[in-house]
Image (cartoon, rainbow, N blue to C red; front, side):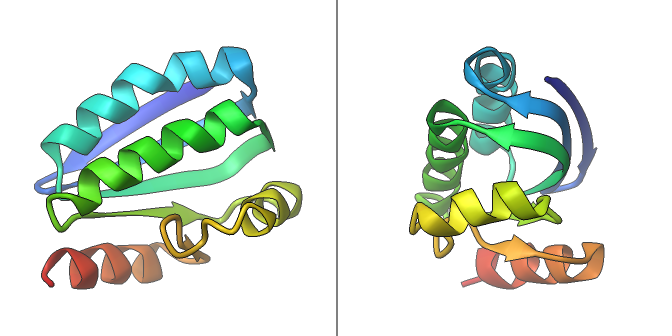
Amino acid sequence: MQIVTAEDGPIARVTLSGKLDIAGAEVIALPLATLAGAKQGLIIDMSGVSFIASLGIRNLVFAARALSRRNGRLVLLNPVKLVAEVLQASGLTDLLPIVHSESEAVATVSRLSQL
């Protein structure tokens, strides 16, 4: 798993690529937790994630909850079909909304973090 971050004011964009399995979840745990504690919004580009395990979902949920406690928001951008299906089956799409464009991601994070 590779993680690349770009910070733009209160919003950070995180690009993930590889498998979000046990090893991948370990790689992203600390950077994601750090960003969730420091930023108002996170856009996680999931287009390069080919697999997601429960530990990967757990890290995303922890980050999303940390943000929501501060009226922030996390959105998932362009997950591949298999990953999107797993996330939808998990019943967490209210907490981990899926969007399909950069502009939709920015609008969703900005709008919800202003509530």
